[in-house]
Image (cartoon, rainbow, N blue to C red; front, side, top):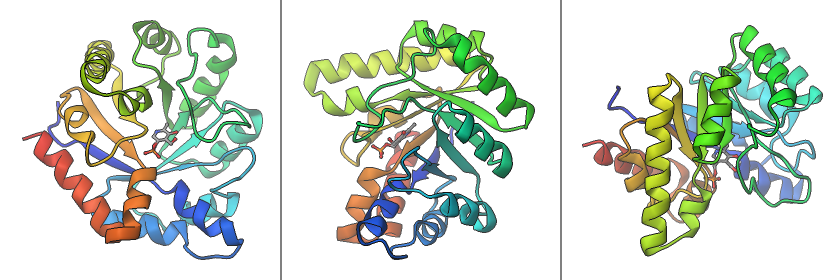
Length: 243
Ligand code: PXP
């Protein structure tokens, strides 16, 4: 197991700020290149059905300009599948998506949606796109990912991020157990959502995790210290957690 924990930087909210004025600044592609310079191992972008942040043109420009892998977050819809197959990013993370939500509130119900998800996992995999399923750290969902033959799962850490004290420690254990179960079954384990300088270290210390995907906090922190500096600090905290 590699000691290096990959950092995927999610640039969605650079686009949120740009779109508030409808112009071109700040450009999420410029942020992606800055993140790469600051130690990001990959870039994550969520193309939502309503295009509220990342746009189709952003995906095209990211594919043209990035020299590190792009992880496209997408809902399991025919429209998104067609886009993924056209651009062929390194990875595609299938996420649940509700039009009315502010952010991705929970994991996919991979167990309940097996028949809907199976053709998406198969068609993306056939195109050599590394598929990941964004799920809760729950053995039932891991079993479903095994049945779906997904090579990667990403555990939703939103609950962990929102809890405190004993309850947070219990949730951390759930994530650690889930990562161990995934790894035992040959599935690469990632994690993300709501991670910050304050809460990242215990998650980064889980040895079976291969990658963390982090966005909103890094973009917010960039207001105070600059984007490269915020990515660099996250990189350092993750490296220190791996000792
Ligand atoms: N991973 C996935 C699958 C996501 O959908 C998101 C964004 O919602 C993140 C990670 C990053 O979460 P955050 O922006 O809270 O760091």
